[in-house]
Length: 395
Ligand SMILES: Nc1ncnc2c1ncn2[C@@H]1O[C@H](COP(=O)(O)OP(=O)(O)OP(=O)(O)O)[C@@H](O)[C@H]1O
Image 1 (cartoon, helix red, strand yellow):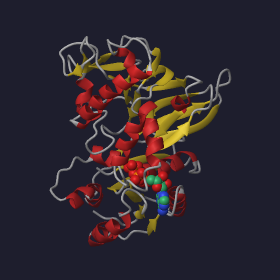
Image 2 (image 1 turned 180 degrees about the vertical axis):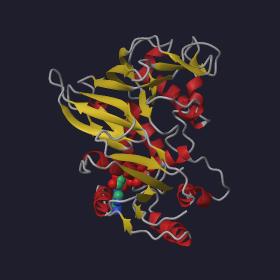
Image 3 (image 1 turned 180 degrees about the horizontal axis):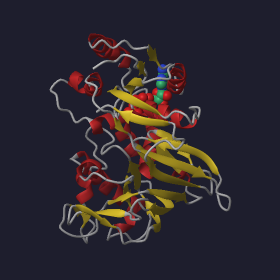
Image 4 (image 1 turned 90 degrees about the horizontal axis):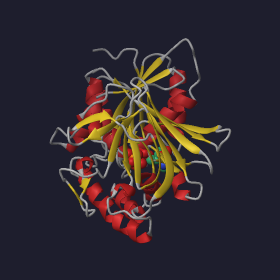
């Protein structure tokens, strides 16, 4: 296979994960490219937040032909780049460009990489080079699905104040709180343990909100996972719910947020044939022993959330947990599921004005805030809306 005419940008974030991207690129990535006869047009290290966007946009302006981006980072840097392609890349009606990414996981969680590549090789270095090897072998890159979220102002106008695209996760509630608080711990805890510490800090919070589930646009249906049949079935419940919510998280492209934390395991086990996202919700009010929202009931429920997370680390087993009549949770044959696992076209989240933490929203680790009285609307989409760029990944 020839690489003639292909312009390769090698880009890494030296500050992601445990700060070793530079060493990894110098020791493994650059030599491998050289051995394969691929001479990058540029090798650049990011210098701070937002720098990756500028580098990529400038590179694309300078190189109008076929390109590939070898990216050493976590999910956050990829998120920055995709949002720059969506919102800062100049519109050109004449040319639609494919931007394939070669992912070299150097970040903290690397959710996308860990979902795409299950560890198959003995050698962890070789595992990290899997996307690079696919690129060198010139395999066909596959398109990335996206979730498009609009943050709207309050009624009656509902003006769009901000839009953001996620390539991994869009969440509110506990996960958004974890991401907000874990960032403060990054310096002392470069690894995934900071997510666990932040989870403990937030485990007793509930979030008051109105939620609307949006159907998959090609079928008009919202699906829910049925553990009895181990399949998705049409959801017959109300699409609109007002509730206290402990956990609310949707994913595209991934079944996990960390190599072992399979929060949306059905993404890979029961693949969707439509443009959709997987949505995991935990509403404590489904607990048969729930009477009212008090500090004591939140404390008691926090233990169940702990069990649920532990099960997510055990091959995504949380989706089969059910309540017994006495409120105990386990892998029982009947009883309400602890998790509601939906496959839908999107969702709306309208936080209760008085609940400040319910206004947080996380998009691939970036935490944003919904305006007072406003709402967030998230939709699964196949491609960047301006239609100029298609994002792909070598697998
Ligand atoms: N030189 C730099 N110094 C400090 N921060 C940087 C630098 N370059 C990029 N960044 C920022 O680092 C942040 C984190 O990067 P990234 O998401 O790639 O890694 P991570 O958070 O460790 O991994 P993950 O998202 O998989 O958990 C990004 O928001 C990016 O803007």
